Image (cartoon, rainbow over all chains, first blue to last red; front, side, top):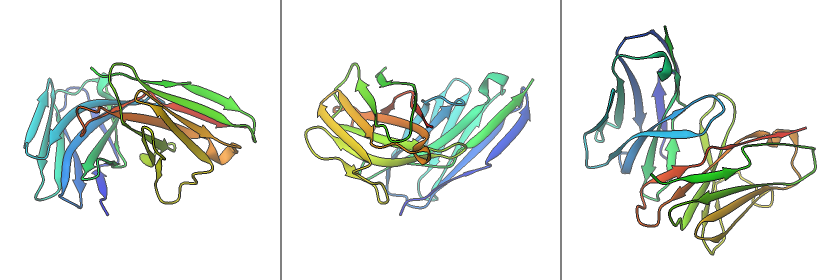
Length: 111
Length: 116
């Protein structure tokens, strides 16, 4: 059974700092891995999607990497801003097309 | 980008009533839609997979008679919480998978259900 774990559960950093969020999964047989952002009480915003054949994806200040063999992904946020404060969710898409989510990392960027 | 509309965004109801939540894909056809439940400070848990024109597939531990799912068209799936009780209060989120891009799900904005 696929399990997705995110570390840390919560993170507080000063504005401007670069940071890394971690995601690990137990079954490497995935179609893709996706990082989402969720603001309190809101739905999900897709940030980056990495196909199983890819190693990384970049969008603006965000960079996500995927190491399928070791079951790990990282989300790198450069020059963090208070507006980046949110919960970040990692999800893997398994062979059946289902998404399995991690517990999320709650990020707080202090001005 | 693809848009999924979920309605209502927030509903308050009395215990014992039924609540229907709609999930629509606005600019693409979705043969498959998914329904998730999220408790405060927790992640999304898949409740069921809704396939157009057929019965939904429920995850283990989810009562199909409690959470009725209908997917009558390629753009609409509904989740009905029957005889809602306070323990059903939660955040419900749907997603839709593009018929042409099968590994990608697009998410609705979620529905917050509060049962008094």
